[in-house]
Picture 1 (cartoon, rainbow over the protein chains, first blue to last red):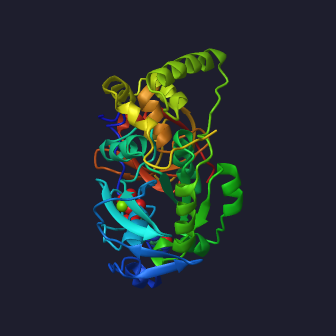
Picture 2 (cartoon, rainbow over the protein chains, first blue to last red):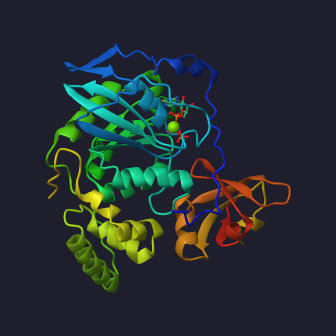
Length: 291
Length: 76
Ligand SMILES: Nc1nc2c(ncn2[C@@H]2O[C@H](COP(=O)(O)OP(=O)(O)OP(=O)(O)O)[C@@H](O)[C@H]2O)c(=O)[nH]1
Ligand SMILES: [Mg+2]
């Protein structure tokens, strides 16, 4: 999928950090498989690369430079490249951990602003979210730039309810005098929102608890439904969504697929043509019974 | 005026996007929506591309893209 926005480049974004903060930039990645972190009885064991079987797949998504790889390193003990500019992660990286008796495979994705118009790196993220069958999508957002970050959260909520929002960089927000009302956001988005400062390991136990809760639930919230005001458009979407659902039974977001087809989205058109879209229908585990 | 004409030392508010389809979608995904505040930060020697600050992040646009973004200068 050569993204339609190929002419647009996103400059490396400097994220200047005050000097007193740099000393703790290493504690999130101890690279120690036996290190454990406990949270209300459940313990984290970092498994590094962790090949082999797993119970749940977790995908880490979010805008560029929000701390996805920092979270990944904290959970797996690996050392994915972390740096002070956007676009550090250009391909997916995988690792593992165990928590509360379950084994997790976690996928670190390149940053993306959108699932709708994508550049080459962003395609990697979008394909993993759409066709990688994650049991949980953790969307890492920058608490200091919420209005820039929330559109992607809403787009992901339109394809799945199996979402945890990691409200990262709250230490930096605090320094700017910003506090984010996480409980209000949780209510608005219908999914857990966990305030955290991944580089200081703050909020990691709470994130793990939220991941385990979503991974284990059989009734995750349904994908968000955007209703369009134009009745002709609504009719076309409903008609096409019905046909998509007929062709690919069990696809949880036929409506979203129909909207992309009406927009002429080349990636989704290809997925319909070659049948990859059917992979949307079979989440790894457990089977989703969204209402 | 359009974004390519906006002076370096000023901020503007996006008023309209004069483009359709995938180009429009991409601009919106990068945060260029009506009502959003924007400034020109770094121009390459020939003025194309230019980096703009919008919603707390630098975004690089080509001249042909900037010419489709209508802005109103903010008061100093
Ligand atoms: N102050 C602070 N800095 C953080 C936190 N989490 C990550 N960072 C820093 O933010 C920068 C980006 O972190 P990464 O983990 O590389 O971000 P990413 O989302 O993987 O970036 P891309 O792969 O480019 O999309 C690095 O300098 C991190 O050290 C945090 O909680 N607080
Ligand atoms: Mg990364």
